[in-house]
Image (cartoon, rainbow, N blue to C red; front, side):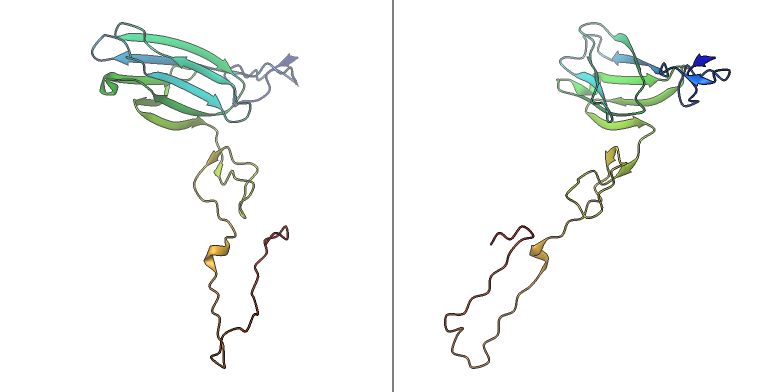
Length: 173
């Protein structure tokens, strides 16, 4: 039996024995404007951390409410709601396929939702985590500015033309 064999998705089929690549979650964005004149340039966007697929930008052009729906097989998303005026009027709820609110906010908003792995996402860091979806600010770097060089001349007459050179890992001075 072909179908979605991953229980993390809305369309999971417990009877499926072969995954057919159809696994997906459906999300509904309910948008509200307390003044009733639209979101005044504010937009809501979700971006997949694995594929970079962008859902949105969604907005209310006029009126007090709007609804958008999107479906994705991705599991982790960054969310931004921003960019306009009268942000105190803006609010929204994101619902999963069962109608449960999984995220709420207003403007400005920056965050994430889904099954996300937090960690260091900078490959130049000493603690880089290639499985991390969301950077948690924990990255550490080898940094020469953390070292102190104390130069002492035991005779007190200077270094007499001697030098001290520092090279990086690539051999550059």
